[in-house]
Length: 448
Image (cartoon, rainbow, N blue to C red; front, side, top):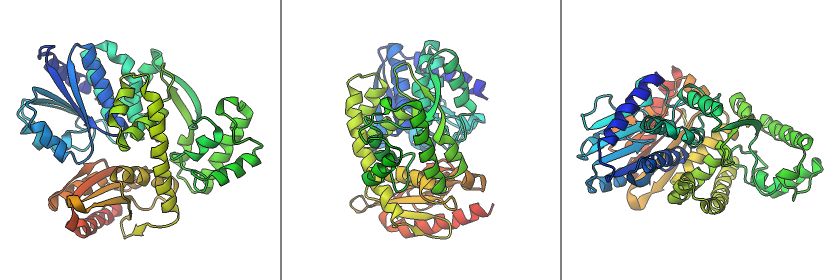
């Protein structure tokens, strides 16, 4: 099936190359780590091919952004990490388009002006096996095989979408194996800890989230005392034996919190580092912080190799993680509502809500029901909904993307995504009806 994606990408590359190099190519992508990585891959490939580009990173449900696109009179738009769920709107834009997406699609039929490369249409599971960034990489390498060196950036996007949980697989795995073979990535085993000191690394650890300790200076100091470590100890100065004790302590903390086995397996695991010195998950975290905290262009600058962007991104990340930690600690203390088919909570920032829900599903709550975050935007007459499940619930029949798309569509809103993670926007006065209808669908799904 990967061969079919490669052939489709060759046709898309031919469509691009049919335009003179003086053309300005429009790139539109999502604003999370996968979407920003995808845009970075595409913009780099376009630049190398001699094209000018104009890139925009959008958030769900894309309505206002797509309205602006309609008025731009573009010749060619490349959509990455989105597009399949907006196919009807794209068809009416009056220009040629390439879609590189891994979310649930509306139709496999498009006009001759639209090239839709959706992993699910080729038998590659968009939930786990391919991301927007790895599909963008397939397009970039079809354009020029020299773009294989963009593999770390592409795989950082897949990592940002948590597609490493359960092991890298499918289309992503083929890219990873090639990158390792050709020296674009190196492999080592370890836990995710980064910061100036061990105390800082633990304090700002949001994913993995250590209940009762992440964001809690007092608890961290108590732990370090037990391990006979100074709170000012830098990660580089801690010897291997002591670091193994830290790893064991943290893993035990997660076991005690009741984390699922697949999450525990991912805590200490193989990690992959790019020649620039960044590890994939670490880079994905920076991109996600920039995108979700209002600094989208900074995230894209990181992907394009701006050496001055890293320091600024670190400051943005600390601010972002503090917001996540505040939200997670509130969930630990209560504030979650429950129905037959779901749990839900309210949050002021819709960009943070889905992230908090995903982390809480893995580290705070049990695995019995999906978790929804709701943000009421009364001034915009909208409610923004993000929801997260886990692999066990998906195996039992959960399909959040289908539920979001179905109910939001019935109520005049927008919705969609993956089985394990999705989102929707509905009118403010439709919140109660939306939640009731979704709850009914989820109960039925879980019976299956």
